[in-house]
Length: 83
Length: 188
Image (cartoon, rainbow over all chains, first blue to last red; front, top):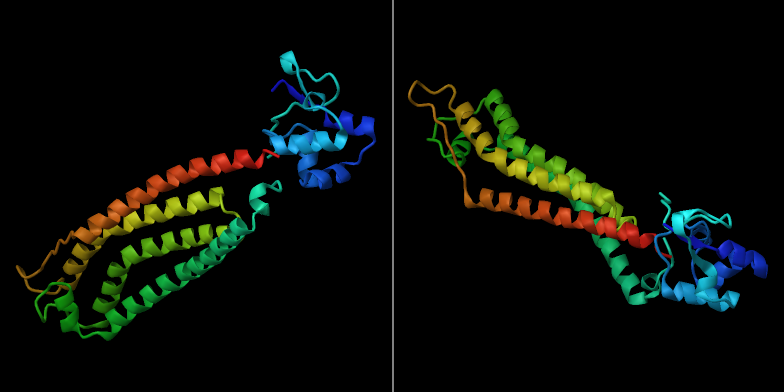
């Protein structure tokens, strides 16, 4: 899938710990890790809203659509198989 | 699994806990009932008078001898449908144990229910055959022309076959639900 999750980049730019974000959003650290790696099939709007609230950013800052599906920022494509 | 609004809803969580408890009870029943049925069958074949066994099998009084071999053979033959059903109950027990342990939608649930429906079908289908074999067996020592082959297909057998088919279809739908639940579990 050509959707790239840039959550890692945003966390690094804002110097925020995954644990703190996971706690604020109300998801487990394991699920946040999967989201960072793009190994999820979707993101709920309320999850996205909470992340944006915490990081003071827009959904577009977290997600990128890339033709061809090649990673340009080291992030994994969304929807990867986590099983 | 993500922390969802579902998991934060106390009413839903209470319902889920009730489901877990009910599943644990059903799983226990799936263990006890086949054992009781087997015990009842044993008590019947080794405790009841031969004339009553003959009457129950639809045979003339005196057609059945009450010797040990006849009783054992009768127990084995009439136990065949129960054996299939017992296997199915053991399979569905695993399903309910999975639900009781929190795996509400899992491949194990589908597999167990599907095997149970198959066992119901097999049990109902072999019952007339087992009954026919039983009548032959019980009258094996009768004189020529007095041996009997009793065929009995009742509405209960047909209803169980129908029920097994319906259950099979439901497990098919459930398999789709499990796939859907798996997809939903990957949405954070």
